[in-house]
Length: 609
Image 1 (cartoon, rainbow, N blue to C red):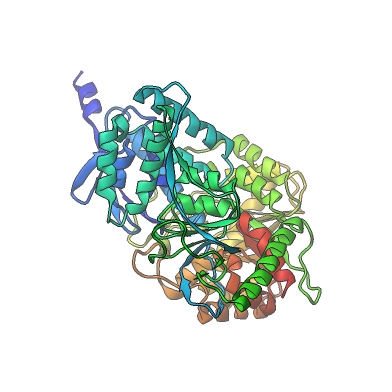
Image 2: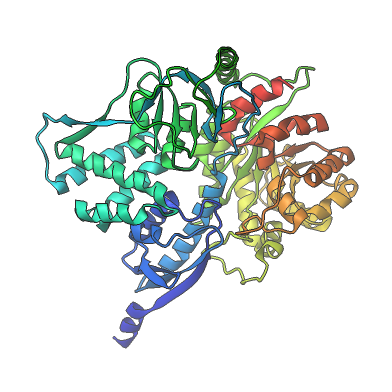
């Protein structure tokens, strides 16, 4: 009995660090809370001299945890150990996913217009020429039977669940999950607490979160018979608003909308994500533009490619914008239509565009977006919660192998900011310089051998490439390949059509390329980590940053391509940066691997080089 009492009282505390550049914001918090709710254990977060429930989205949001901040995750009860291990692993996973899904840097073009110009941040590219219409709402009488508050909340919850299921493979899916978790928090007990929460957020750095509270409140009210409707014209228009509610984006997308100007918000807000999803030319301009309708700007020019707004454009400005608008639309349509075609430069040089994927959903998206194959298959998704069996791994790999002819699969990359709940990795002062990548696999050989066997069983005689991460010397590669050959021999599997290579991300490899060329079949440059180690700046550091487009990084890339005689690709974020594409291609790189959504535009960009 005493033992049971001690078991129920047991408290386990672990320290976690925010590594996403966006901080611990609504979407990852919602995922974390949803996961925490699966445990009966008392789970709290301790940060900034406060302790809050880990099962309440608003309470965690109120902590305002940014990149680099740390917090204590406290689990108390009989399942404390299990909850702690699982949530630790799950947190690392959502931080990594959030960094992978960071809004791609939008390069604004330099442009000059004759009319007075206001410049802002681009949300979604495109050009619009139309009257500016001020955001206005009107109350609308409802003919539906009004529901009680609790009934309305239940209906709203059902609506969000439906939207989440319908959009599961899209960026916006997690917006609906986040709103669903917010809706089920104690804030939504009554309208008074909702309004109090909104007031707390006003004029703070978290003001952009107000839109989600207001959106949910509006949905609830509509089910209670109190509806509001956006007053929008039937002719083409540019909408001017302080901010938009997420649900309003889908509403305006069905109208004659040409563009959107927001006077508040961020490129990572939920409204911004949805505007990009709907491909509506949009910018954020933090300046007062208009008080009331009509705005008296009948022919405003919004050039979201350059981030410019010209309220009173000249005739020459209009002509320039119309040409630009036509060209942009043609390019967008052409790039999507031609996404499955071979990519060649103007001189006829073939460039292979591959995809970086993390699971079956991202693999299917890559296929739909026209990927020529997979340049980086991250396998960590199978290992984060519990140790997968060989059969589970093999089935997951086979599903993805069936989709493509060209696949490069990376063996488990654990260490640094990534851990596993079922393997004790000793705490290190400098984890990015410690047991990470291939060093971890060579230390935990049973896990490594199981993964290799699963890959061999799934490959079905396809030309698979196996890539070892964080290799820093030739001996590591030789040992890893020897283990792979032993696994294949012991299990009677022919691996003659499997190639073995490395992620080139440790600078020491650059100085031994001629020696590496004697043993490896290929290289793939991970520019994220290569940049990190070149500048000796941790890529998750809260205040220091290393520029991947630096001339020093390009010098290293030039030295690599000029030295090696083996096939080489680039699979880091740099491969998708607009300003880097031409330099990489002209340098000699002919294989680039990027996130799926960038593939059509990257292919078209290369066709113009």
